Image (cartoon, rainbow, N blue to C red; front, side, top):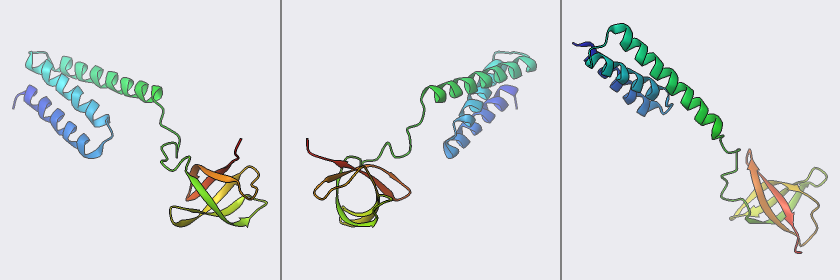
Length: 141
């Protein structure tokens, strides 16, 4: 088996494993192995194949880390489709602590009420944390 074929098979194996894991690091190493295969195919010495593969891997890891740093993940709950929806006050669990039960979509939920609630106020969902809705008062202006 030629060195180019060995590098290419290693690269394809790593890319296939990446499809199963979804980490993207194996993709970087797979592409780096394919760069080594290209160097071997063009007749480069073994040290050149390893050097090209290593430089490609380091560049790929650097680019991945740079991309992740420049695209931070959204905060937990920021992709919440319930945000802004109206809930109905059911009863207080602990009024001084701001804990209540609210009705939303046909079910009763525990909720943390932010702000001062008065009878007749409209409560809207502001977020969710550990199965507890964070709701806030939305008074008419």
